[in-house]
Image (cartoon, rainbow, N blue to C red; front, side, top):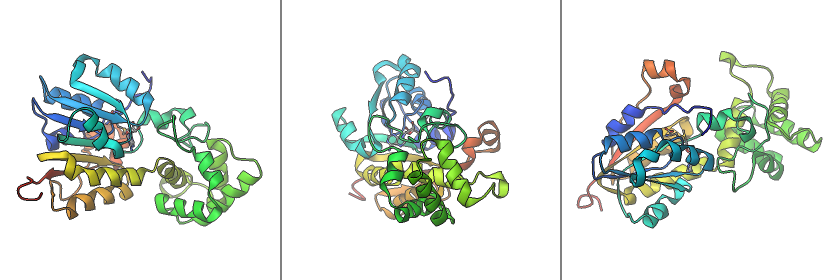
Length: 299
Ligand SMILES: C[S@@+](CC[C@H](N)C(=O)[O-])C[C@H]1O[C@@H](n2cnc3c(N)ncnc32)[C@H](O)[C@@H]1O
């Protein structure tokens, strides 16, 4: 188990939206360290089931320990949530009574230096949630040309200085100066300048952008929300927690524009004062929920 702790965000609010019941079957698309899954299993006692997915094997190992007492009420699967349909089918389910997704990275992923997610910790430039496959951040930076890199920094980091930053990164790379998160941050600061308003590190947006690109986070989320109307049983609820506006937009429109889904949250639910104080990471969390309209009304 990781010594670093992940505090589950918006747990009560998510459970209120999904309202797990005994006999129900639920999917947790991002089981992580098992917080939401544990809540669903407790609320659907004695026989509700959860199929939990995560693309990170380290997180799954940790969730397995935490959830061991629930026995075969929980199945944990190493998979991306764009594969939710296949995972459910392999477990014998066509429909589930609820789907939870708490997207993005966990605190332990961010905090463990060797994962390479954070500019605050020196580590290799990896950033993959699933370390068993895909391109690392360093490989991505090597493969993209300067313009492509700038476009990613602009699109996923909403970084106004994307062009200069991309130039500085590519120059440092060709000078053999980029191997670690420290090196990357140095190249960014060289172009973007020192700290910004609110003491935000100038590397924040670029690191976010690279992480999103490395893990195909937006494409994954789009695939997940597109699969929900088929996978939810009539009346089943999807509850999705996201952490930045690009993700929230994807969820908002998917729930609003599909006649098969009835949005349950006009505005996203955000953390209350107590949770925000106890867990600063929850301050940017937004929960949206929607219910599957019965198929006789919207096939
Ligand atoms: C914020 S954490 C989830 C924490 C969890 N709800 C808890 O309470 O412990 C997000 C998790 O989602 C996983 N993840 C992110 N994108 C994923 C994807 N496309 N498919 C599967 N897992 C994903 C990450 O590896 C991470 O473990």
